Structures are given as structure tokens and as C-alpha cells.
Image (cartoon, rainbow, N blue to C red; front, side, top):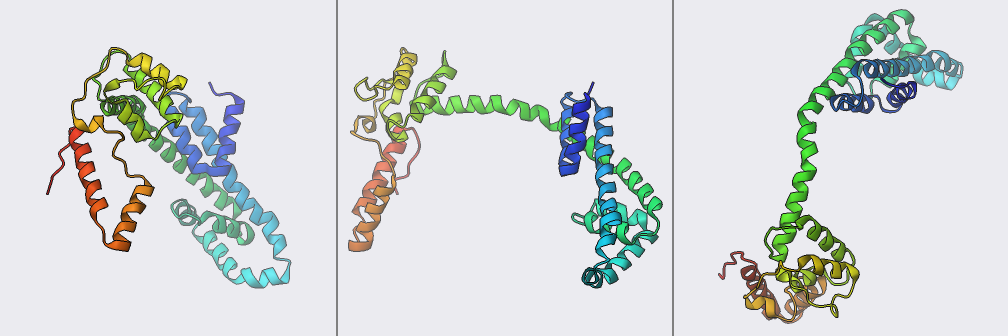
Length: 288
């Protein structure tokens, strides 16, 4: 059961962004958070109220503006023709404006200012809202039922993929407390105590580099969770003093050597280091 406040909120939402509100109502009904009938009625009432308000602005304020000679000279010829056309073809005008972005404002204002058959126009306005609103809400409901299920499961799949990626980067197998280890690793990285490539290099295989290098509580918590999960890394890359990286200062040094002295040796050395890192991580790195 919708409360009066909720109904008024839906009505107010349509006055600000009617299509977005109607789609939101459709999605909410697809999730079972809103009862369809009253929510649909509130949407239709709000959309109709907004349409009538546009027409009324033209009827009440627009006609007064025409009392100003400059305004009348600027807008009367084209506006009068538009108002006359709307009088003759109200159904086409209203239905067409529903599917033409930006058309309703000038059309409804013109109908209010120059239209001579207001009740006929308002009747077709009611018909259009009665057709348009259910189409929009039902369409969103149907689409929501087809997509909300897979979307709801996305967060779980993303979390599992994140855990897999983090454990693989640490080179430890899946086991107990994987979610806790991943959370602790993310919190440790967030401290920015070391660059991210250095952290993964130092903690490769789940080995704790020691409290002297990583004294922060976040890293101590990570070390505690990794006890018993360590794996040996035999590749010589992991015994180097520092990881292979590609920070901006290194890129600038390589470029300076090439630009100033046509010296490609730093670049060749970096390529070799990258291939060695790829080999250590179990990736194929062609030597050609």
C-alpha cells in the first residue's frame, strides 16, 4: 500500500522528469517495491498535471505577453498558424509531440495561446497520457524483470573475480578466508605506504617482508591472514632488489636517451626486464 507521501513524490517526480520517473516506477514494480496500480495512476496524474500546466501557462500568461507589441510582432504570425494547426489536428499534434523530443513545450504553449478548442485539446491530452504512461511503465516493468536478476547477481560475480585476481597477483591458491585476505590487501594498498607494484613484488607468494618494511597495522593484519598460505617462488625475478615498473620518470629517462643521443640501450633493457617479469608471472613473452 502506497502512502500519500509516496504518491505525491511520484507525482512531483513526473513534473521534474516524467520519463525518468515513469521508468523508475516500472523498475520498482518489477522488484516488487511498489504496487503497480496506484503507482501507475500517480504517474499518469503527474504527467497529465504537467501537460495541463504547460497549456495553462500559454492560456493565462502567454496571452498577456501578446499585449506587448514587440512580443506580438515577433511570435504572432508563426504561433497563430501553429495554434490553428493544433486545433485542426489535436490527435496528431499530441501523439507526435510524445515521440518528438522538445516538441511538447512550444506546441502546448501555442495551443494555450492561440487554440480556440481547449476542451478538444485537453481531451486528446488525457487520451495520450492514458496510452503513453502505461506503455512506459509496463515497458520498464517488463525490461526490469528481464534484467534485474542478472544485474543483482553482478556484484557477487564481480567480488569473486576481484578475489581471484588479487590472489593470483599474490600467487597464492584459493583457500580459507579468501575474502578477508582480499579486503585486507585492498586496505593495505589504500595506505599508499609503497607503490602498488612494489607491494605485490614484496608480498609475492604471500610472504611477509617484515615489520620493518611494512609496519602499518593494515599490513600486519594482512600478514596474520596469510600465515600458512605462503608459496615458494623460484624464479630469479623475485630475488631482484626491485620490481620492473614503468613509472613516468623511467619513461622520460628512456625518451631523453633516445631523443638526445639516439641511445636505445635503456629502452632495450626495459624490454628485457618486462619479458623477464612476464616469464616470472607465467605469461608468454616472445623474444623476437
